[in-house]
Image (cartoon, rainbow, N blue to C red):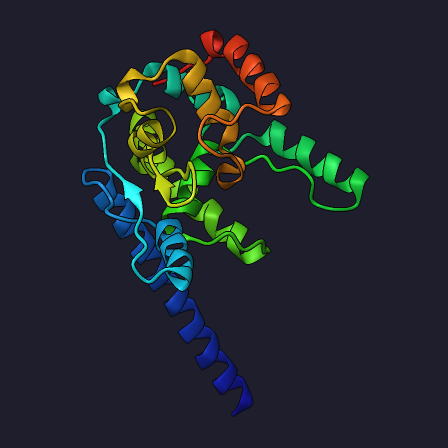
Length: 229
């Protein structure tokens, strides 16, 4: 009796898992051709903002890949995922280096998420750190890479990345921080936007700390070698 109940529960759990993966994959297929109106990260940020101000909203405007400055594309790839064009969703060398560094420090101090992994998280998941969340992120990353072109993945990422308090996507970021359209960003402006991606809400418009100036200089030197789709 107990064995039958166990098998039944296991079967229900497996079915639920498969249904969930099918739900994710269905959205990936849809978003290969159609643009998402909002993401899990955007919805979570809006909920946080509305706890303080019920009338709060997000700044977000979709722009096509061709209307985003190539400088920003190169800056983001140089900053976040230099091997983006060549890998299949995961940078195994970077992952091993991050694991070694974290083991030496005895805590998580480094990550190795590719643009594809970050997009998977932004579209569907939360900022929670757990093995279950990382496993789901990996599964969605595989779906993205098998379904979408690198250009589409980068287009989606640049349109949903967070670039300030309630500021999402390249167009809103360019207008908020520099008062220009995404297609008009200069190399220096693009490098600054890429530099703040890890902690976008920490920096005010045009803020120029010593760290950011150094980081922008590094990215400007790397950008000419960055490969973009």
